[in-house]
Figure: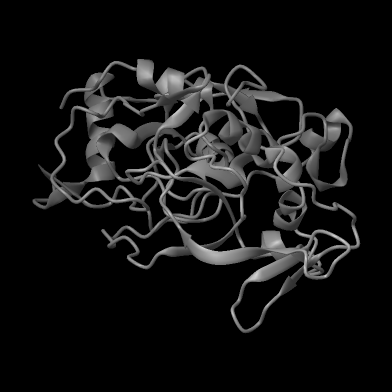
Length: 329
């Protein structure tokens, strides 16, 4: 379940008071930190989404969490954002990890996936696995899978296999309720293909001043200007969030934003307008997730986009976005 650390922002794994990578630090350490790294400007072309499945490692969960909401909640509470409900017709549930999260940062088989795998028996209540630190994951080079011994008998092992990670559902948990994103541009007519992982650079079908057509991003910004007397207004105006990960100061999203610089100009303006994927373009496993549908778009500052893009949408973000009145062309 998603909750709120502060008024606006929730970050998975965010620890307040720990400034930077070195653990807890004084407030001025946050103030002296470098400016945010500008978000990488995506390609301005309407690229086709990836057709290859996203390969990730999954846990051999016990029980049937897909059909058992109570067990599913236990796994989610224990293993966090690695676990999710798929967007397939069966709403299948499992926990998927990048290989780095299996092998561990030192490649010693002590990654988070291995630590979680040892707890499967305890969380499910259906088995007793030995969680001794001496048991680590080992890779089967022939199959690419990992195995983990979970008892004194060397034959007592479980496998963390490589498989296709299904698309995660776009319904976001808001106080226990799977919630659809209905952003302020939901009434705009879709004229291009809508696919997970796509940027807002496909055609809108709307004529531009240069005689060409506006892409989705340009059309969204123009619709925003039309609704706000020629200015660009943030769809998350007033939203509060930590100015820097792990530091106590809060930043507030301004009401009005600056015009975005041209994509080919390497200038970072933290208050420049950016079209944001509310359901993020990539999930936390770096697999395609959010689409280029207009209902999934929001206009926010570049600074806020940098803070949000690597975290799941919070209940506060979703509630505020869904309350914005729809903009009409």
